[in-house]
Length: 262
Image (tube, rainbow, N blue to C red; front, side):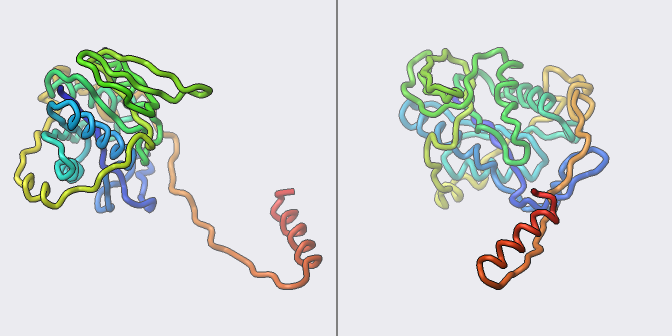
């Protein structure tokens, strides 16, 4: 069984600067980590592999430093990894990102199952997984809560719908995005770190794609543009009041009126 998990390196802090012209996060020099939601997809894939055999790969898109999350995946039990990296991919919106990763996935060979986290902490759109599946022309299910059974040619899952919990059987190849409660992610292994420290990571650039049209990638291939993006302002102002309950109540009411909350 051939399994692929899509992972991403995201900022490890909320204190990230934004390029005012492009609306793109400035990631250089910022502490980074693996997207937390991807850890649940990775744990799901590892358990499926342990129970059914096969090979487990990961793929990520980003600058060269994103190899760190692939190394982390190796430390958890992943067999192979690939990084999609090219300056021409910078500034991609959700649609261009989905298309870019789908092109990278085509370079990974014939896959049975592709797993993604529900969303990323730096984008929160939850759109990339399903859009990749559409570009790849394969069935997909989002909001997967449980893996009920893995069969020879299909997988049976439980998914969270707005008002119901539904069970579906999906034929391979397919793509699933999983919820964070599906499994508890394992910790990286120091032993595996030593074993995999020299393991190769495949790098995929635009020239490796079947579709080399630069107008479909990065800012050029993004039909949506961010009008304005900014970090939230932190308000640490505070006041301490003393007095009896009636005095404090009156002051509270006056303050709410002053702030035009009431």
